[in-house]
Amino acid sequence: MRKMNITLVIAVTVLSLFGLLMVYSSSYVWAEYKFDDAFKYVKNQGMFLILGLILMFAVSKVHFEKYYKYSNKIFLVCFILLVLVLFVGTERNGSKSWFGIGSFGIQPSEFMKLAMIIFTSKYLYNNRKDINNIKKGVIPILGLTLVVFALIMLQPDFGTGLILVMGIIGLLFVGGVDLKFFLKIGLVGVGGIVALIAAAPYRLKRILSFLNPWEDPLGSGFQIIQSLYAIGPGGLFGFGLGGSRQKHFYLPEPQTDFIFSIISEEFGFVGILIVASLFITIIALGIKIALKCENLFGKYLAFGIIFELGFQALLNLMVVVGLIPVTGVTLPFLSYGGSSLMITLMSIGIILNISRHQK
Image 1: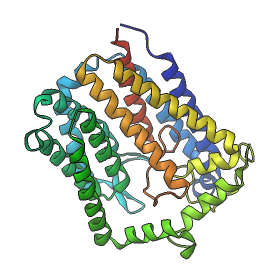
Image 2: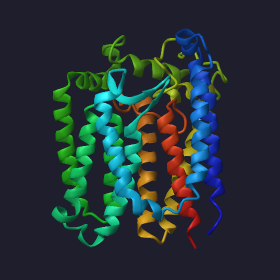
Image 3: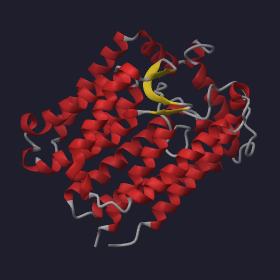
């Protein structure tokens, strides 16, 4: 076995530690007001970061072929948790997505994202001869993906469901599915989005607020406007660590979905460039490891993890700069959220193990 990809380890660790710093910087005002403890969020995030890094190194020592063997069991456990959370889960901000454990919360949909990638990688490996047969090769796995998506939407959590679906579509593309099929799926997807908007009027408000947030500046357009007010004045070097104005009760809970806005305000364009460079490094290294992997299951697994990670980061950044409607998606490694951070680091551990089993 080769040694772990040290460059990937360094990039992930630096980004995660910087995320911990920014969780504190963006949250201490809200934490002091809500809990009378300025360190409330950063303490929780720090615990999950330590646990996540331990799990990342532990997972990096587990041969990736083990996931092939246990993929069905992993998927089944995550599926059961996804169903259970609808009945016994804790509701937060209108979404029943968490199992509450004291002041902590575990989000099963985050675990399902990884479980679905593992399961689909095995499926593509076992059915590679039938993958161009839409009925035999594609419809079964796509149907299962839509079932999982429907369960996540019942919470509801459109952002996480969208990331999961896009990760599977990316894997199908790598698996060799005809490009024409994706064009048809795109049309069906547009129809599905229209139906989802029709079923829940608040989604239409989000669309309208994205097109013109100043039409309802104190309602549906509030978050986007406050995010732009944070990004705009940052300039080249920003106001410095702790210098954000928008975190003072203007931008709601800035330590989660809109943490990038606070990074932009405090560190300016230079900070944006550094964070973007770290993300590009991680994604490029992940793709390189996937391309060099001679085991087809390992190749699919690495590609799927990187697709989901890259798409989630891109989706979050597009939201905070006002290019797309608010989706409720966190920024990997940086945003506050224990389940997301822990699963992301475990996923990197899998990629590190794949990199160790290459010639």
